[in-house]
Length: 96
Image (cartoon, rainbow, N blue to C red; front, top):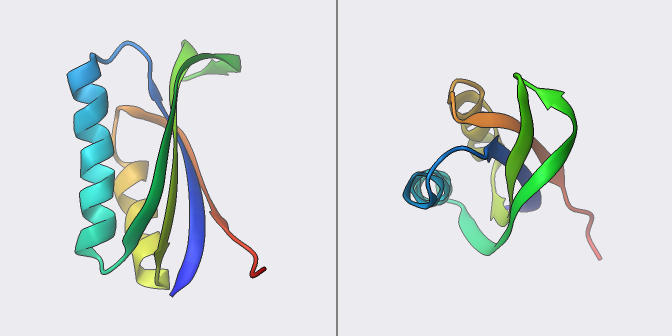
């Protein structure tokens, strides 16, 4: 298994319950695909550098997890079709 970091930007106009449900969905997807969530860092609402999908603010969360290639492909597929997600990026972490 490899270590990954994922930056997730969601719509800022979602309620706190909806934000938490979306984070739980991603965490459940990681666990369901045989991965392990190591750390979740919620940055909160921030102003975007430029509008994304007509939104000027976004809600940021950073997931650190380990998993296989299939997990990354499934996260990419699911988050790409989720309307609440503005942007996401998955980074492979280097070995120390």
